[in-house]
Length: 473
Image 1 (tube, rainbow, N blue to C red):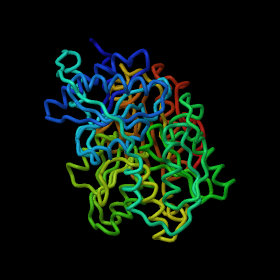
Image 2: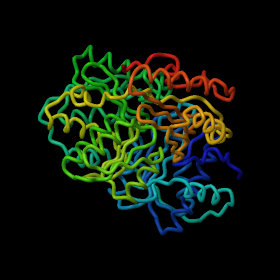
Image 3: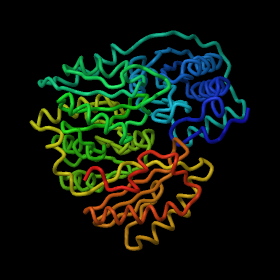
Image 4: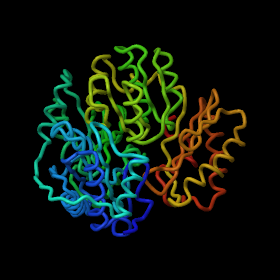
């Protein structure tokens, strides 16, 4: 069967339900993944899912494909991606899978595929899986299927890392997603007073799925202020990403939180390597340098960051999107529950509120992560050719980084445009050391981007930031 090539993305599988991904497609992916695992002598795979309308039937079809390919499965049911990653350690098997499209809209679904302890399939491995499926090179067998809920073992393991002294008053926005089944329990177990927002599961996702959307964070901030809470957290549909607002309801982009975590790491492990993606503020690398650490910029994407951590021995990885990876005393995969509790522990240790802890990082005005609709079949060419040319000629004296899309840096500003690996859009981010410079960069970027009719401005998240003054200033 010929599958849409666009569902095989850089670090997972995602597509539009009933168009690109169906029960039949999920069954074939299961058969292909069974072959991939069999050739590596892996015989057991755990499978979890989020609460999208299609996830239950897709999970059943995928498991059936695995079983028909000779792989035994453990269905852990409704879950979070990090619980699925934990299941590899719990069941002592390198294979795991999460049925999810993460922060993508409700009409998308897909898979995150684990092929090692805290290692997920990416790049050439995903293309190898695609070739197996398209060639029909399927293993054959009679795998068994069992069901087991492992949330309690996961929660017990998680809580052993933290002994919070303060009775934190926390607002938790789970956006009507699977996160609502787990995060309120996790924070209460840690001793927090929890106020929930959009806790009820609703597969129509009436409040969105992306915790980095400023509409989401503005609502969260208002709730924090109304409830006189200490902090607010928001999570995506599979729960592995976090976003945060402080006690005053102010949004803090996650790269600033990465800088805080860098301080936490470098206080105890001088000279540690810390990885961050190319959408992050210049403040991140400057902070790591100042504290004697080794900053390493890398490609956006949870699979790419995890692989680089394992390659370099980095103690921390972090992305603007809210994927955080700790290696000093954790597994090295993205677990937003661990990251949130780690942040509360850090603030307790320093006796600070989040607003106080972040006050030293306000040297740049930064935009949110902006997502603009561009068709999958043209987005990479648009960025790598036309937009790269436009940005490099518009800032001829800036340093150019082609690691992932194009990023330009000068001493006073930064701008980056890249093609998304997990959806039909491009991402844009920029910052300036002053409001005047921030506005100049914004206006120049807007002139460049509006020249291309291929960009769908109606299909955007945080697109307002290319029109308005930075809301965080």
